[in-house]
Image 1: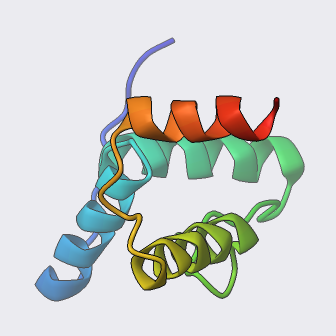
Image 2: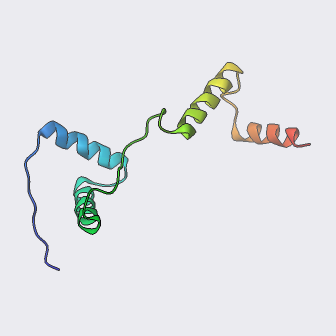
Image 3: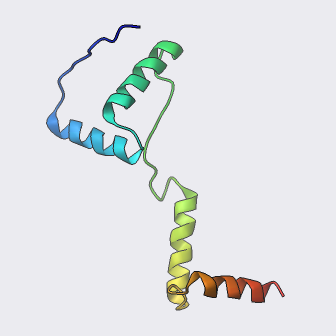
Length: 93
């Protein structure tokens, strides 16, 4: 299959923001644009949503932040992995 060059103009600020988001999602902007075109054709429409999740969107992140706050409040946030494992072993007895 022959490759074709697709070009378009966009605001420089939007381009930079798009590149940063793609990097956070583990891809580059050209890969994202190729993925969009392939899915658009296959699905005959825009079939997906990809976005970075905020704490409000992701209960796992919220739970980890809550656990960190509790550890800080109880003075155990600086425990080593060995100390944590010892505490778990003791609790299982």
